[in-house]
Image (cartoon, helix red, strand yellow):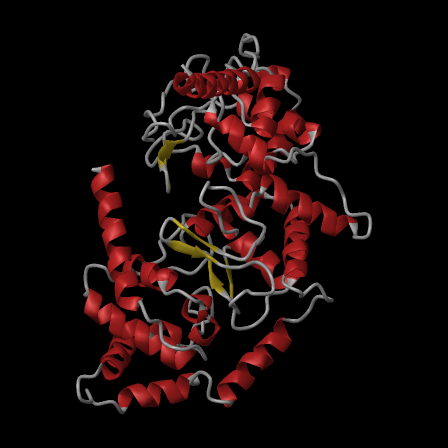
Length: 453
């Protein structure tokens, strides 16, 4: 009998613990409402909501390729499986049309839907919890005045037990620190506004901060991360940018999608920049000032000229060849002995130099590659992606464009080009894994294309 007693006791304790967890994890349903008329919302509040939606990048994640805005269905790959974004139009059956403001605010702050089910933190409520009541009201007003779209997203593709939403109660206990944002009284109003937007609605850390094995952001805030085959560079003092960012250059980059001393937004960041064009200059300045402070460059504005001098100084010390020197070097290779450096130089001369060493300035010409973070970064991910797939033109946007070379350049040729660019336009050592990086970039694009077919 004693031999049976201990397993029984353990079983009872486990059952009690499981029951206690389920009891604690359950969240009440918030009663549905009749979808409010669009005319019932204050026009100024709706207009403010439009800017906040842009700051939060809501359309980027809640719009599937070829789908209606905010209707959801975008596949979000995670290390645990694929999660599909939800419909946040005011449709009463598949969207949030029956959600009250209280239900909307709970989802933003606690990651819990109107029906009491937990949301996965692919929806960054761990950042949105910092948003104020007034801004939540503006977001709600804007979304509830969009046209309703009847569209149910596909079911998430998560293995058991990760598809059990009650487990997210434990994730929240471990990692969710509810807001609202608390201002740093030792900093300026601009700094605090920027911190509120970057740490909160802008959720920059969702891409730019590393994550632990449970998918939560680590304490290494804004030190960079890998996102969907791209590198989200560090936004602190470890930034690999060849010359320092400033509030001025960051503000221009965010508002226009490029900056002549740093390059162009691409990958997921391109979508962010595309949405920010409607954001107020004050908010862009606040974000830029806060990020510049994290990088240790919160000094007075007007440093771009000094940065250009710094680049010229780098060239003068042989870190990267000047345009004339690089062109002469390319022309003197004469095909060489077929080595990768010679091959890369010839490919550069044929495919790249015409724009990147031509007389046209950014955005009509290519950036000076000595300034490229993609070439100076720790990984060649972004360089491989840009060369393979280019920078598409955006209607109405005055920003750089670039053709992709996926159809005309083999992996071997791209590796040779990347090796040449790294050696001649940065002061960093060779990438040890560039061949794998190139192969993975092309394979990921093929898989994405096949998934959309």
